[in-house]
Image (cartoon, rainbow, N blue to C red; front, side, top):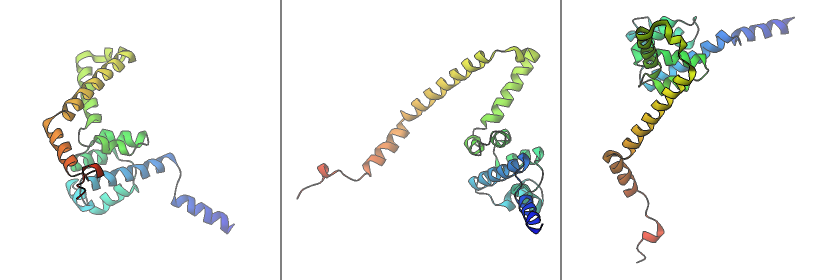
Length: 176
């Protein structure tokens, strides 16, 4: 009987429910983003206007998933709340880090809201193929952006300097 009680306690200490897994993932994401911004828990708590203990519990995932706190965290750390939610939902903790500066997840929401303003409920009738074609166009524009960036003078100088500092090959060394 004591063995069952011990097993029950250890299960309670590390719950395997979906909500518990989400809490742990949210905790990982919040800590990762906070550290990437070079902020302490105290810094974030102050920016969120909450006691450090409340923030610490939130970051540790010991409280219920709170959409408002995620929004406040994103504002305090200049990250993307929608990317945080998506990272938790799709078990992709790197996504919020990837989108923290360009705010792509929130930009998509804003653009969708603008489309809804323009087209109303008819927006639901846009076929998936049109969305895919639009995103392929965006992909091509991004590719062109990076090609221009790679061909820029600054990139050329950076590559040239890096090459200058490389070890000379044996063929280039003076045999004297």
